[in-house]
Length: 338
Ligand SMILES: NC(=O)c1ccc[n+]([C@@H]2O[C@H](COP(=O)([O-])OP(=O)(O)OC[C@H]3O[C@@H](n4cnc5c(N)ncnc54)[C@H](OP(=O)(O)O)[C@@H]3O)[C@@H](O)[C@H]2O)c1
Image (cartoon, rainbow, N blue to C red):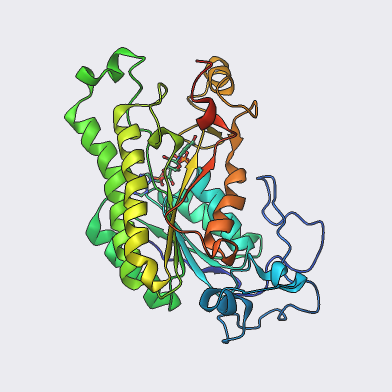
């Protein structure tokens, strides 16, 4: 069993990004700059942020704002200082962008994937930009590995506040190709898609709910392909993405009394990931996609950061069991142009 490095990198809960305006916080990926507390209101560098009872993070986790709120409250709304986040499948694509976003908001982020070099590189990239990250490497479809990994995070970091179950694979091709027709789908391919997309999500949610404190937040990356039929994806993909949605709704009910919120993201077609990826994306296929998207373009991986931060933070304090579309309007058009 590989438990990963774990390699802890970067400043340990120091303020990130530093109070230098105009500096892209994560290089090479379109650098989203999230404004954290204004100079003078932030704890100084090296100040522990794990949270006195009146730290912004603790205030919003334990006690959502009621009544009029100040500009200062809004500044802290997305602040994850002192919190620990695990993002499965963050060695590339949407997970990587999400991990970087969570780190920008102040969380220590545990980056995860099966590919050791890629996983380590993402954690190192976050650390190089001044964030705090560690890495774990292993197969999320293996229940024993996930249990050990989650226990390891809690043992090392002392807490787990945000879990994003994002690991997934494309599965096989759509029925528009011979090998994607239902009669041609092999048992091996079906089982593999189930394991990587659905069992991995179940394992992650089960262990997260076991160790999370009250007020935790769980996010699952489903897809618009889980909300309707989709001529561009295979049977395993659409079935597992749909199942994730009901897993989220069911778990949201169970965990609501503990104040743990559970929500899904449903991205549409996103570029710059390996699933939606540049390797498989011909100009013709991209045009087919674009014709189905009212905003007239595919999404970019970095555009997942805002929705993730919303669901991971106090900004969504009354949101649970929801499915947040990140699809440029594609679900409503529903392949009408196809
Ligand atoms: N791109 C899109 O258009 C799109 C749209 C809707 C939803 N999504 C969803 O977004 C999520 C991320 O996909 P992506 O597009 O960003 O693709 P990606 O770049 O291929 O990322 C997939 C990630 O999942 C990891 N992974 C897959 N199976 C795993 C397993 N069994 N154990 C551990 N890690 C595993 C991969 O890790 P390694 O490579 O290190 O193994 C990688 O980090 C998926 O759930 C996908 O269904 C994507």
